[in-house]
Length: 376
Length: 85
Ligand code: SF4
Ligand code: SF4
Image (tube, rainbow over all chains, first blue to last red; front, side):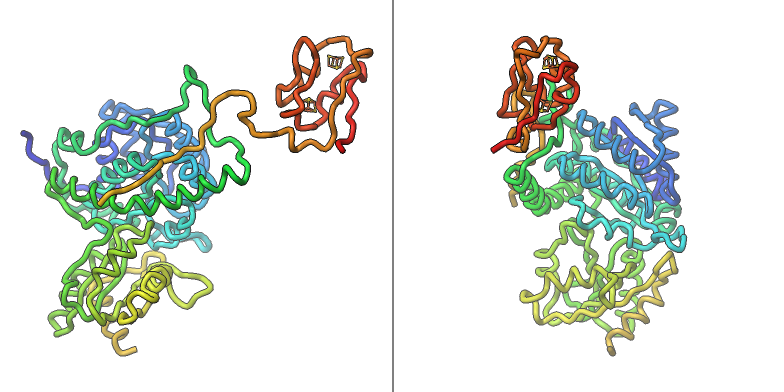
């Protein structure tokens, strides 16, 4: 049995290595900062023969997702990646992938949205795709990006729903961290070849997404909604089996740190949640019983796991790196309040928006913010 | 924990009526005057729903959507569009 290999690499390259390990068949791609490094690395792998896939350079993100939809409908395992306005440009075709029940996996490297232009991370882009019917993971380390892409392919292909794997631009995509690469035979055991029940095939003509009448359309939408909820056990199973095979664990629907006895709970996603572990340590040193709850799944929002994990009477400090326009705070806080309402009336939810457009979120700053929120 | 999914995809196979009950859309019905018709088959070529019989030049009204393309293209004026009841 071969041992795992440990290297130093960026989050973007971790994503590309996961694409290679997943033995992806087709990769349509269009560059956009900070995602470009993923597509460059994948294109190079295809070019030098490391990855036996078809790379399709297209003229924009709308076409990238259209090519992904078509290739997936033809039975291929498909990957693409984007960021910010590229993701927004795909919006219409995202619905075609989910409504068409096609298991495309895409990385979105989180970046703030135009206008005005920014290149740096916040979470407005992925959260703005909430209602497209895609499952969404949010990752807080390079290793988690690698691990999650493999888990995402497995879940997507089990349930025929596309999955978006999100992580922060630059803090994750461009920073080096140690990365453990499990032996390929272990990954092959975890992720078997994609064998769709149906595919576009000239030998057996069929058509895809024909016009439906109301009585036909409604059940498709109901089933998509039901199956998105039904993905939660599959997400847990994938995380558990990945751990059994590789020994690595990033949490399943949620990830927690010092949560059991916490009176003050930080609630956030992506790289800021990794930094928040250090803020929790600072707060603990100051005698505050602090803990962390990071939803790894944003969609479906892991309501039951959050409700079960939060300690009695906790104050939850939601740190949102996005705006919920039309409401005073951020989107995560609204999602959290809606699942707690009527179920956990002992919980207090407080909310601050921070880190917009890549403003740095160091551990001491976030610890001080949480302290200040306690007095509000 | 078990997951129950139907993973139901919007797929259809080529067959008569695969596009739905398109005849219900019709407000005007194409009627062929067999005295004038020369059986040139142009209407058969143009009909987007493929509901005209190539040899008989008869129309399947269950699926004819009443678009009138056949009447416009007919070189002899053999097809008239008559208002549905
Ligand atoms: S186009 Fe007119 S003339 Fe030609 S076959 Fe059709 S109805 Fe007859
Ligand atoms: S009205 Fe339209 S659908 Fe009906 S027969 Fe003529 S061309 Fe075909």
